[in-house]
Image (cartoon, rainbow, N blue to C red; front, side, top):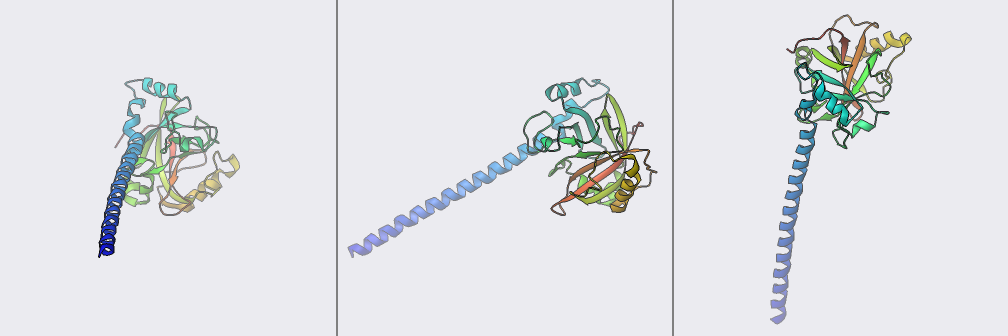
Length: 251
């Protein structure tokens, strides 16, 4: 009888311990989930266009705020805007294509990185093809909306953008959306030489999901906005436009 009471008491104590541990685990998991959600929101908030809005060069501030950003990070040299989207960011360029994968435009470590120009391109966008990279992020942050151009309505209704560099605005007219592999050198070769420009341009148009005939030729300068695709491991979504000295009004 005494042994039976001891067994029941032991079972009761063990049950209490199990319940306590279960409750503690639930509390810890809930706390971790809450922290993960908070941390994710912090990352997206820090990478949102509103975070950089004060630095955007405008006619009103004559680039003073932009120069303040350059004082924080001398590798900031341009500003990209895609009309009708949240893509409205400073552009950087590092010595290689790895630095701004996890460094933001203010020069600080950040998982969201920055929009950056291929290290093989000229900062004055004088090359035939210039490649800009940015992370594909949720909540329409960074280049998170590029993949949406796979939809015809999005491609048809978001036709123009703007690229500010060397103290001047330059227009962008988008003419193609391409899905390609990250290791496809026929796409991801910056500053294509004179003799290969037509082949390069033809290759882009052949791969394109959507195109718009605006008369692009090898005499033009084109810019590729590239980001990771959700459709495949090494897939990349690329929005391609022609740069012009003419600027376009915000729709």
